[in-house]
Image (cartoon, rainbow, N blue to C red):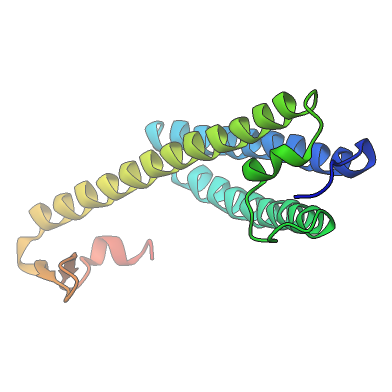
Length: 169
C-alpha cells in the first residue's frame, strides 16, 4: 500500500456503501412485511411479496457487484492485492475518513446479518406452515398420504391429493 486516496477516490465508494445500507433496509422491510402476511394468513400477499423480494435481491446483487468492482479498482490503484477486503484497505485512506468508512462497512455487515435472520425466520415459518397443512391433510384422509424420506434425509409426502384440494391446484 503505497498511497493515500483522495476525496475523488472515496466519494463513489461512500455513495455505494450508503446506497447498499439503504437497499438492505428496504429488503429487511419487505421481509418484515412478508412475515406479517404469513402471520395474517394471506398467501396471495406472501407470494406477491416474495416476488418483490426476489426482484429487490437481484437489484441488490448488481449494487454489491458495483461496490466490489469499485473496491477492486481502488486496490489496483494503490498497488494492493485486488482481493484485499475494504476493511484491510482502510489504511490507504486519510485518518479523518476512516471512522466513517468503518461505520458504513459495519452497518452494511449488520444489515446483512439482520436480513439473513429475518429471511431465515420467514423460511422456518413457511416450512412449519407447510408441515401443518400436510399433517392436516394427512389426518383428514390418512389413506392418501405416506411420509417418505429422500436420500438427503428430507421428509416428503407421497400419495394422491384429495379431490377437495385438486380444484385449487
